[in-house]
Image: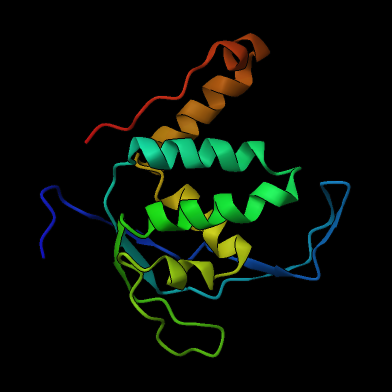
Length: 155
């Protein structure tokens, strides 16, 4: 099946999991050792987010301190994200090819939290340079952050 809009291939070289990371009171106190387990690998993704996915991300951020809702929110996010990730050539920690994630939330649920967070960031629906510029703008003043509204990525 071919999508109606062009998919984007995102290199996964900068996706890392950190071994030995220490988190205390929600703060990373020791970074740990990063392992770039997807070097030379890629993800092909549709570069648009549904309203439901945007809402899931918002709910996930709001549930960070509430572990009773965190699992449900992660499951919902994996379900939506699996509709945008068309294919990949990812391998698991043993170097074996992973199953294709398209419409397979269970495949995404088997990832580490760091891999899932990387996928959310890397497949955010707009080019990394645009996200970086948006981040820099929002960091300039706190009032801009208070007045900012979520925008839906364009197709």
